[in-house]
Every structure is written in structure tokens, then in C-alpha cells.
Image 1 (spheres, helix red, strand yellow):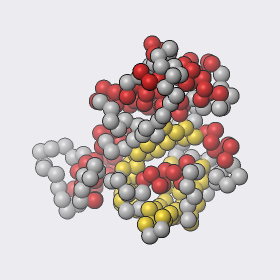
Image 2: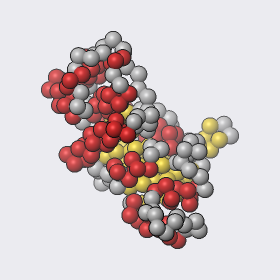
Image 3: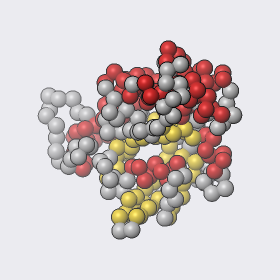
Image 4: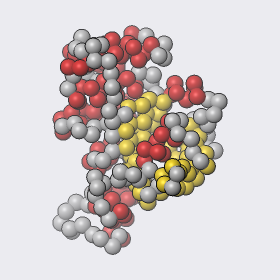
Length: 254
């Protein structure tokens, strides 16, 4: 176990009946590192993240978070992790401020932090708006704000911008860039948007059939694509999408 790592995954495996969802994955994440998990549906991304979150238990292997396992450390770990899922359900007839205060109460967090968060997610003007009347992008910003209330050391985002229009997506990106610039929070991001991974993350992990196919910085990964059998058109900029197709033979959305 490396004490300098925020998350260390060692030879983790998980099966569901006859399906091997995760097959011997190793992963290391450093403080302040933003990591993108890319893979088609059924690749094992969600199962891996759920094991890191403590929702699922691995069949074998070890997961260390800040040097600790989930067993016997649940209260501590839940206080240092922030979660934002693809679709978050709120109480429709609470307004934005009441919703923030409700979730803050779970961590005994005061109003000052709620004020900081509502400014960060740019929802001051919607303070008294019922959640049911928020747009999709505003709801996702609220969900992200809730995940940041406890100033997490680790933030886990599961497709946070799926279904949002380009402007709303970029608003989420701006919040995350600011977080990256101003804190040492580590991020694990699952996404189906290659541009999102390129814009936000400094380390990419490509998963398929429960295994890591490739990982590294964007620069290193895109530099390797010239050695792969299928090449993009020479006049076009090489992208993560090109790399993904070369590795898996399909588009991420398939």
C-alpha cells in the first residue's frame, strides 16, 4: 500500500453469476489527479466505481482509500467522498437553498458552506426556485454542488453531463476546472463524451470486458496511436475517439 496515493486498487475481481464484470484491475490515483474511466456499456466501469464507493464488495483483491479499506472505516470514508450520479432525484417541493441545507445537515455543515457552494454552482438566482422547476443543467449543477458540500478529498462522477445540451455541459466543466485549480480533490469521472475526458482529465483509463486495455496521460496515449493497426486520416487531428476505436473496434456509444 502506497501512503502517497488517494486510491489504490489491487487485482480486484467481481463476478455476477456467470458474468465476470471486473477481471483483475489495478489502478492508482494520486492526490489532485483527475481520472477518466472510458468504456462501452457493460465494460465494468460502474462495477469498479461501485466497489470504490463501497456499494459493492470485490470477490477478491484489495481497495485502499486514503490508506484504509471500507471494513471498519465506513463513517470516515463516507465523509471524505463526494458522489454525483447520472440521474439524481430530489424532493420536488423543496427549493434550491432548502435542498442544499438538507444535505448539509447530514454532515453537520453550516450555512456558510452552503453559501459558498451555491455561488460555485452559480444558482444564487435560483435560491428560492423549486427543484421541480429547474432545467436539466441546473439540476445537475445542484447535484454536483451537493457532492461538494463536505469538501471531499475524492469526487466520483458517473456520467454527470449525459443528456445535457452543450452549454449546460460546459457549465459543469467550468465548475470542475475551478475545483481542480483550487483544491487537491481527486476525481474519477465516467463519461461517454471523449471531449469531456480530454477537457477535464489528466489521466485516461480505457476499460472493456472487465479489464484495462490502456491507461496513461492523454499525450502519451495519443502518441501511441500511430503504432496501432488502424490509423485515422492523416489530415485530421488524432483524438481519444480514434484511440478507443482502435482498441475496441467500436464507438463508445455502441
